[in-house]
Image (cartoon, rainbow, N blue to C red; front, side, top):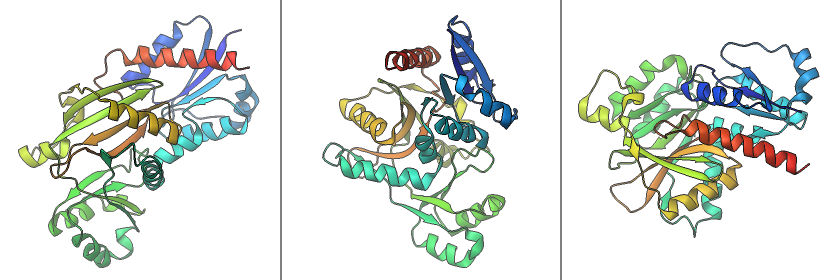
Length: 303
């Protein structure tokens, strides 16, 4: 009998297109696609057919992907990256707490890694003067959206002085009706080191940090997809960190960003994402498809 898979993801993403095309060549698979940007779900029909699925995979791009994971949990349908893990990654505050918990548990193993100071702050619009006074005392700061899966409200803004706090409030005023996640700015060597994980396979890519490109060149805009990427050689300490994060956050497909500070050894971990884009990794679609097929085989063997 064919295995039935549901993928919830933006179907026009190059990585997702390649994964779908590879899975379609597998004769023993039946594949359904849900695009959370375009597709509706008839709930009554879906409830009646959900038990037909052997596996649900979500690269979250909208709330309906989360809804599908809720349903999968309700009906005990296996998922790659489960509901709790994805909700952790979706919420910057929950993720920050989970990372600090993991770093505390493994502090002896993770002496070369740090997390930046961070805060949650109510919407600046509730008391603008209070927010400015608070923020000015802690500059430079990086303001980040609370929900990192909502592409309509997602932002990442560096403020180094009072005028840039004003610029932030003016430019993002329509997006500030929610609590803010805020990090201290880490003065680093200007290189983002991205670590990507698929099961037991770990990859490293590095690129110039967009913030440092802006500070140096002052371009009108930066297309991060056009920044040159090259391989980043992973040492055993970074591989150990990857395995700890996979275990503690219950993630099998994810990525995280490291920067090297100027004032101390080691790295700071700035961001972590479930199911990232894996830009710069050759044949990553094949790696992910092989992982999915192995995962399905493991489910069958464990019956």
